[in-house]
Image 1 (cartoon, helix red, strand yellow):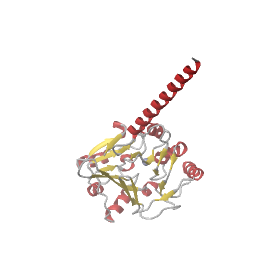
Image 2 (cartoon, helix red, strand yellow; image 1 turned 60 degrees about the vertical axis):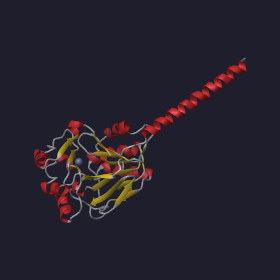
Image 3 (tube, helix red, strand yellow; image 1 turned 90 degrees about the vertical axis):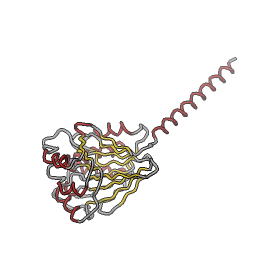
Image 4 (cartoon, helix red, strand yellow; image 1 turned 30 degrees about the vertical axis):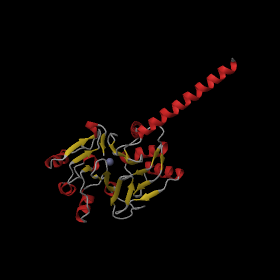
Amino acid sequence: MKKHLYLILIIFFLTTAFAGLAFWQNNSNENKNEKTKIIFLDVGQGDAMMINTLGDTQILVDGGDGKDILNKLGEYLPFYDRKIELVIMTHPDKDHIGGLVEVLKYYEVEQILETGIKCEKAICEEWDKLIEEKNIPVKYAQFGQRIKVGNIEMTVLYPFENLKDKEIKNSNDASIVLRLVVNSEQGLQPESVEILLTGDAGFPVENDLIYQNINIESKILKVSHHGSKYGTSSEFLKSVKPEKAIISVGKNNYGHPATELLNRLRNMNIEIFRTDEGGDWILEY
Ligand SMILES: [Zn+2]
């Protein structure tokens, strides 16, 4: 009689375990992306954008300031995915690098792309120390570099030269400018959409890009420097020709986004999204 009881218990245990495993597998299949997700994360006054590719690869461009980014990543990634395949740091201002330092602490980062400009701030020292401790490979951004991850192709448009260890007065104007092409093959006809990321770059960088005749045309533009009036000129907009513009902005004392900038966008009938009003902005392809 006792033997029977053991047998029943063992069968019960195995059935439950298999059912649990099947459930877990089903769930993880559901988490496999059927679409590419591009999320402009609302991290207050700062920039953070996550790309979740069809192949379940994550790319993070900037991380806002502080720990908000960790909650955001937790919201969009399954609990067991602790890996970010590529982190791009456009420039070492606190509202871009601050959250990335937290990401380095709590996530496994496979590769970093940055400019490497000279930075003696405490946050930069922490950043460099974590990279060294965790032995993360770093690439220094320079015009023409191409990065292909799954169905996404990124091209570095700025800086024009390697800025490693260079002293730059205005770090905003040493921001990495990236053009992304997302190839969607959902329908019969492959479609693609371009996204231009400009960090906090101002007029000088925009003018350089225009006069060098670099292809910056993109359907979606992440407006530079949280909507500062010193960036995103009408001339620049005429070259980019965006249909939609996203302003990553929170409470601030800088007057971001500036009325002048908003008017420049409105005058060209560009649809405006703001993270301070609409929260996270999610694009799916
Ligand atoms: Zn900024």
